[in-house]
Image 1 (cartoon, rainbow, N blue to C red):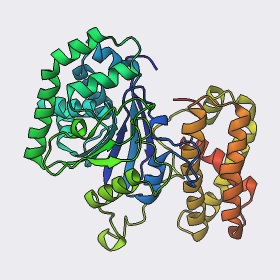
Image 2: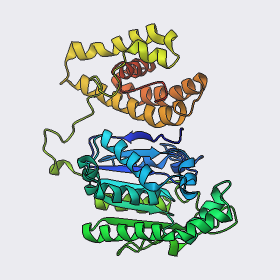
Image 3: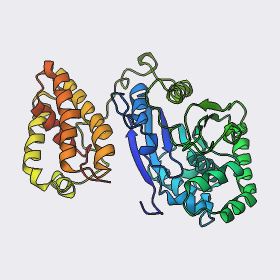
Image 4: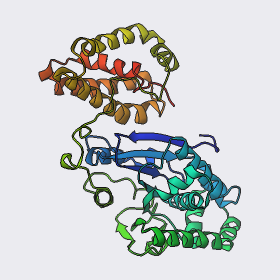
Length: 399
């Protein structure tokens, strides 16, 4: 990823009542930072997907940036203010600010989030101001709020970070102190909810990167919670039973309670994503999408398949029980494809054989079995997959 680039992706967005944004830290990754390889959870080890299943009333996103960003900042080759502006403009371009925003950040990602909030608050840009005003909560996972702990972290993780850089960082510790003071004052004025977690285990059996004292931002009511993990793995729960997950899920549910059917107007209580309609996020036609993904040889089959799936909508209309079943199938396929195929495989450059096997195992087989009573077959599921591709809800190439 070029040093000037932000990575932004939707994990799950179902017209939720709040937007949750994951921000990784030093040497992190917008996906792998939050992923535990080998998890037995049905959604895999990427725990934002667990939240999507457990708290479907929330929209979930992940934002990332090159590993060099924090290294450049530590060496005074760039500043957090510039990166914060980049993040704010990214969020503004996606029209954030209409719902409460909750940041979940690991390590130095927390410092960036504090700068984002400050920059938004002090900006004259209306869109940025709106984003800052809608920040309802920040969840810090092993974020160092003191210069001494931060210097140790950088020296440990950043190649070429010398004692000279450490001394310079400690000398400029007033900058960090000012950022933290600004954040504390903002929390006091706005009653922003802040949660804090810190590691209890040594990283690489060497040292405690962020201890309780360093993890504490000094915000009233934000008591640092110890987690039995090191700095790298504190944000990688192995299962839904891990404290870091159960605690964050509880706090999110408490902060943004689910809207139950009795609380929601009947006209919209069970509104869906209109997966049978054309998406506005990708204007390419089916042939272009298949060519861009290196699958031009599949176009004839794909076009025929999507046409076969589309016919029931024309024949039976959109209000029948048959159409309702089809929409449920589409929603299941879209969720599984994004969670189990697109982000972990296609975005990571997996080969066609690996992707084909995963589609068979993760989508076609389980869903044809799930909808067997509705006469769905493996062919039905495959037709629906290409239907979603044609409607631009699914893409087969990297963003």
